[in-house]
Length: 258
Ligand SMILES: NC(=O)c1ccc[n+]([C@@H]2O[C@H](COP(=O)([O-])OP(=O)(O)OC[C@H]3O[C@@H](n4cnc5c(N)ncnc54)[C@H](OP(=O)(O)O)[C@@H]3O)[C@@H](O)[C@H]2O)c1
Image (cartoon, rainbow, N blue to C red; front, side, top):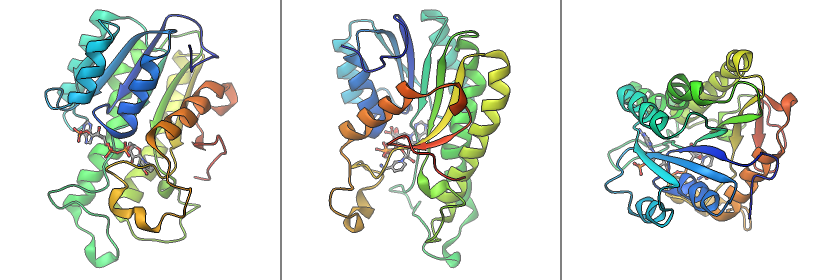
């Protein structure tokens, strides 16, 4: 069985931010794909990522779990170096790590008075700088001639053109920056990696820890399970063509304004 129909055999895939939520589900679905011969799953604490560890154990060597904290560049470099010991090519890279709120005080701002420089910096370090540092250290593993995808899971609230509600300064700003970095990467990386399609993807509101405190206002039928979201996102990745490089797309493939 395959979920990435448009790629060839012997696929190498990186899922960054795989301990839970959307990233973990990417690993679950890709583990069922016979064409994926090497799956690299990264997370910041492999010792506590029990569901990921159980999945990796079932894969008997086909799946490699590496420690990678996007706020610690040395860990990104080390994870890339370890990956190179197992494979020299990754055809699909998906950045899933993201933060909206934390137990120790990070929370989306309702109004300007709630804005806190340290919270803004924390959000930027994970949401914006994370995928950029992953690109910096892993891009040399992308193939230079054949089709490949570098995707960053972003959020519609990072769209400047689509911002009608305001608030959420740290998350909106960091996701807008993530989108800008994705677009900038799409230009530079495509010079060396001729078949590369570099995109930002909005998953839709998905039932994970990240959205849980905000789910009560989601209209009925609009809250996706992780399984549904990842099925959609894999479909979008599978259908991307050369002209999609540098774009921002929703779970159903429709373009989102910057
Ligand atoms: N869920 C939604 O409705 C929704 C909507 C729009 C966009 N998104 C985006 O989708 C992506 C995935 O979100 P999710 O819903 O799956 O969230 P989630 O369930 O809260 O998972 C967040 C993931 O990010 C990881 N992470 C956080 N900080 C990290 C760091 N410093 N280094 C490495 N990994 C780190 C977490 O690892 P730990 O387990 O170690 O904390 C966890 O694996 C995010 O980029 C999010 O912004 C989600």
